[in-house]
Image (cartoon, rainbow, N blue to C red; front, side, top):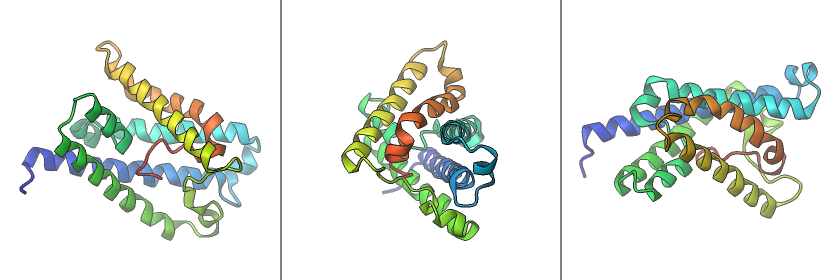
Length: 196
């Protein structure tokens, strides 16, 4: 099957955007939470660091959405987002599958350098992977469902209204600041199957 040139650009943009999101986003997580973190010394409050980490991770997503790659593909950078748009009839099945393959590929590309950059600090929190918290897998699963649903709800509200559409990326840092408080300790607050 030959991929049309326009779709190839969409898929490449999704892969690049997802790689950027995970590379910089997980660097932030490791920098803020890894063993020996200077941020932990400067901000000993776990609640404040949780909010800050969500905000900073959201800023990366916002910047990807505002970048040239985001403008080409729409910056889904998340299979759950692509699936949600497909369910609403906004994407063809073949394009949705291409987006998801591109996002998963981008996730691997974005995460591999973390193994080379961070030593003990990265391995102390398993390089920022999302893991079930002390409450177990069931609570982690429910947390991810609720957090991802909140993300999709936010996107549907903002993208679905012409007067809000252009402001969509700017609310993502605030959304993740809020979502991180109840969900970070329970599941890692991934909201993104490519990250998980």
